[in-house]
Amino acid sequence: MAIVDLVMPKLGESIMEATILKWHKQSGDTVALDETVLEIATDKVDSEVPSTAAGVIQEILFQVNEVVPIGTVIARIQTAASQQTTSTISSPPTPPVTAQPIAPVSAAINQKPITIGANRFYSPLVLNIAASEGIPMTELENIPGSGSEGRITKKDILEYVSSRTQPPVVVKQTTAIPAPTVPILSTPSPVVSGNVEIIEMDRMRKLIADHMVKSKHTSPHVTSFTEADVTNLVLWREKVKKDFEKREGTKITYTPLFIEAIVRCIKKFPLINCSLDGNNIIIKKDINIGMATALPSGNLIVPVIRSADQYNMVGLAKQVNQLADAARQGKLRPDDTQNGTFTLTNVGTFGSLMGTPIINQPQVAILAVGAIKKRPVVVETPAGDSIAIRHMMYLSMSYDHRIVDGSLGATFLTAVAKELESFDADRQL
Image 1 (cartoon, rainbow, N blue to C red):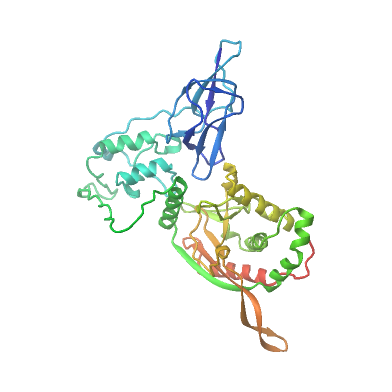
Image 2: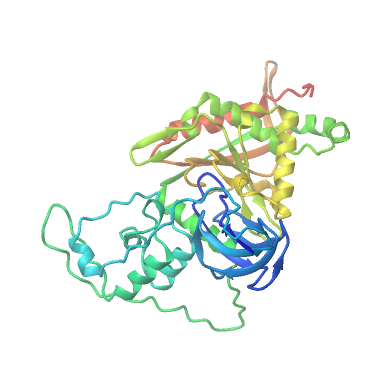
């Protein structure tokens, strides 16, 4: 008999850990090669982990809801191989992380403080424990972590909670006198009365809530608005959509048309396509457009079209439809939601005229398009002004005021509107 280690697989460039959602197999169960053993979740998508060998599950090392670093052995499979040595069939695991004991709060205060930036990653499990124990973000940021790159593990925060008899004393570098200790006041639960129904958030809704709060906490949001006459764009799509679907085997929606205009304007204003790391502005050379997609559950996910500037209109339409279909069917891969540099959200899909979207961190801007409505507007012509019925659409863009000033934000948004207005109604595919 031989023992094969099943490890937590690598799920993307920036993903360092995953949460176990469900075990499909238990100790003693028979498993076939490539058969699903368990389901895991990152902060973006859920995935299934297949078996790397055929045999019997000998041991399960982690339980449901535990957060496991990438490369860690999560189960062992006993195979019928003739060799007596233990083998590992997987990608090379990352070095094991040895958890360090957390000193009591009073001792940790006297040590050199750990400086942690605003971009520190917290797993959903750590955030849930912090919320249930009444640990604010300012306090969470100062807890030492024994995980990869100083991240806080489940063990770290549980040990911290057990030693947290009082709030940590804040020590400023400019003075040797600690701030006075203030007792913790627990927030009472709201009183529920009357005819109500209480529904617990599902896991994805909790993640969305955490991301939205973090984004508002991180970026000072400013939103600018404009409108565009998209009559030419609407008429062109109506003219070509049947032939396009017959020829290409996929529909052409408005989304690839909007993305094309955004990409052109990003090339003119590259500062929109960046992120912030401390005092450093990181301008992204790749243009990866995220498109907010509503799921049947009512939740939201943002798959990413990578190198969107490398596609023509046909390519963009196929990418948009493939990612949207995969999102709705729960078939997105972890990499499909990674490394976005700018996000588009279509609030008009549900009839809304405009919105004030929240930035998808660590990006610095997100653009929302509203419903296209026919309205009487003043049309300027060489022969004079006239009133005509036109297809009009509002656009709004929220941006991080730490990097994007009002002049750049408004100029970029206006440029996108002009791109849409100048669409060639006689364009050939």
